[in-house]
Image 1 (cartoon, helix red, strand yellow):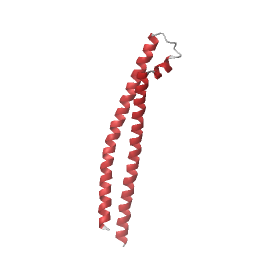
Image 2 (tube, rainbow, N blue to C red):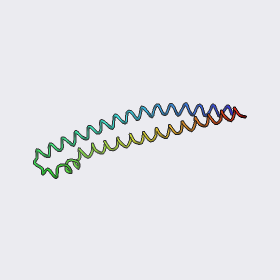
Image 3 (cartoon, rainbow, N blue to C red):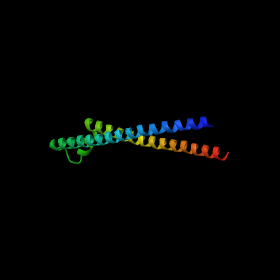
Image 4 (spheres, rainbow, N blue to C red):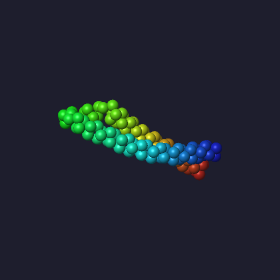
Length: 116
């Protein structure tokens, strides 16, 4: 039984280390997402101003601006960074559940050994 307890303890330690790494990754992805959002909004504003200066009808400007190659490329990057952030959040939730399960295993094992 002691060997299993040691193995579970190692798994808890490894999972907590992975959680630390994942938290840093989440922070990096949050920053990246904010930067991509800023880049997209700046590109969109610049394109809108250019289209206004070219006397494009106002009702067409939003669609034309968003559909332009430079703006749609920054929007793609923004959306991709958002999804990467969301997936990292989900990964963290999974790791936390894994850690909780391992801690429960240790508790049950200690209860069994204490009552046996």
